[in-house]
Length: 148
Image 1: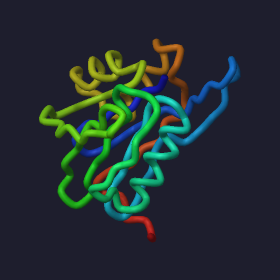
Image 2 (image 1 turned 90 degrees about the horizontal axis):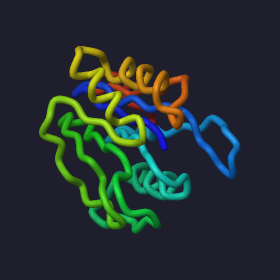
Image 3 (image 1 turned 135 degrees about the vertical axis):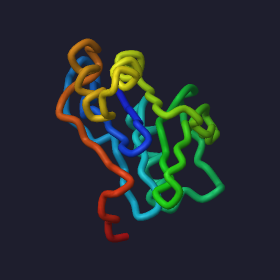
């Protein structure tokens, strides 16, 4: 339950986590010198995928518990984006100018279709989707590369 949005330059994510009926803030973005990733789904799966991304996202992918879409992975060098899907994290190339996933996906896609940025799209989603909350985190292709 989240909103991750990609506008071709910036990946944005909300910061809401829920557990046993409690709301709290968490980071859903992982930023490395090679990639950035915005994760959805079970927090344990997000942590597993985050460790894999921090390791350089090698060809050997981890297996996660939950089936479905797990987020968006962006190659910082090429700017290519991939939807990570299924228990084996199949990297499906994103060919559209924008993409989104999570419970606020439809609101984010509509906002970007109307000219909003990825950050603004997640902000719009937070107004309508009960599983999306502010503040929004983001990472952009032109951001400084973090130290490894």
